[in-house]
Image (cartoon, rainbow, N blue to C red; front, side, top):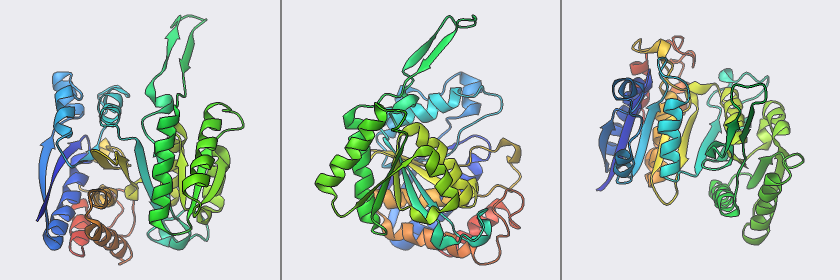
Length: 353
């Protein structure tokens, strides 16, 4: 029996609640498909920071390196200034563990959840591959004469060829493995960001022409991409983009797939330790009410299993999510309007894995 060590960070707000439901489903999957998950729980988040002033110590990073994967519920506390936890925990883990891919499947599970007129599940089924450790988020830049009328702030989009190339290569490989439309769309703004954009465009073309002649190459400016997400989402198969643009377009993608309640993602190091999470945040106003939607967390758990090699279990979770959403019992994806509680939704999906 294969055994995997999983680090679990429930985090803040409703994070621990959705994490419990994800683990409930994972436990069913491990028994049914014959593998074992050993969980190690960590209390990193807002409450720990308020008590100790600590976000994510270096010792924790070393512990994380010993895990096969990490699962995160949510980070974000109303009593902690924005940026402290996000930079001190999320970004620190991504950079330290070199989780250089943010993987966001965009899948519409049922027609009634989509705000776009006339779009059905067959129309919204694509994946965004976002570069996750470079660009503006590296923090290169600074502020001079802060607080004066002459204040200047800079934050620079920094990319080296190796960082771009490994991201684009991952995206090409993923497109080939996905084996649907076999089209990789690069999203950037090369007509204005002529230096960084040109690097991405050349890398996309050179890798494609050399190693991926079976994959169709496509390109969108990021502003055009947001338009086509709304008008013609069925055009897309796999999208690859840089960090900031990926952060923006995946939120739009979440809405067209039904909202953050079903949006799952992974911070991937293909050669190391990855971290999976629901995209919805900590939603502190719903804490302890048993009303938050756990589906994104459950879908993220399925992504985690797929990445560590338990593909059949991952497919079973995806099928259970799809079947549960289309079974008539879950009335809405919005918190407090599902017609079922958080734990009941978890029970429903776990029962059909």
